[in-house]
Length: 273
Ligand code: G3P
Ligand code: CA
Image (cartoon, rainbow, N blue to C red):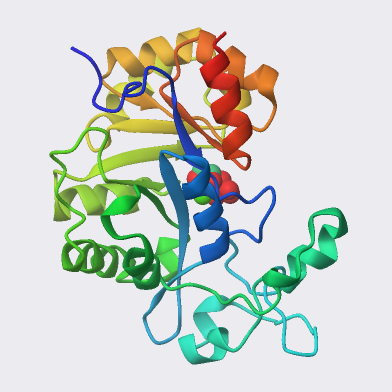
């Protein structure tokens, strides 16, 4: 039986890693808009929680790297020690221009950290979401709040294929909790590396609560793909920006991958192996 997200477009799914983050500040609405316009199958969100319990979309647990005060001073400290109001006055785009002068754009200055709700309001049902619970052990209630928002925006209807929403985490505890809260959620277990030894048993264990794996791309080979598929799991490696690596993964039968460069990925996959 075909796996539920297996190549609906006749090619692996393209997951816009932090949006079109190769050319725009990661996890800003602009980055998502560019990825969406380029034809990404999924927009990825990494979740952090503020001190007042709001889910915001940021990769790092601290604000130092991607947030700046108006005068350019880097923000300091953990996201979970800041209120939403404190984060929203900060600039989430300026760092990108500083770090990437060749890709800098004036329009990136002044971009804000989006809340997850704002992402749902902006894109609604016109996009698919691939949402990661980050550091969930530091943010009790993250899973419940995520599910509340998904339900409020009617995004938990999983009859679609591929699903409107995929949830991912490195934390098996977080995924098991989500599975217990709603067994119909489509879940992906992220993995740093996949050891060849015992890979079949690992896949069977993950299949108890999840629908796929998201391994680091360099640890994925035919054996891993076969073991995952035999266990009924899709394989979505991260983060793939090199066309040769995209073609290798396509040849060995992966079901999708994360990339910072959606247009490059689509061009490469559509050209075939
Ligand atoms: O979620 C897949 C990939 O994004 C994991 O790496 O650190 O970019 O969240 P990271
Ligand atoms: Ca991620």
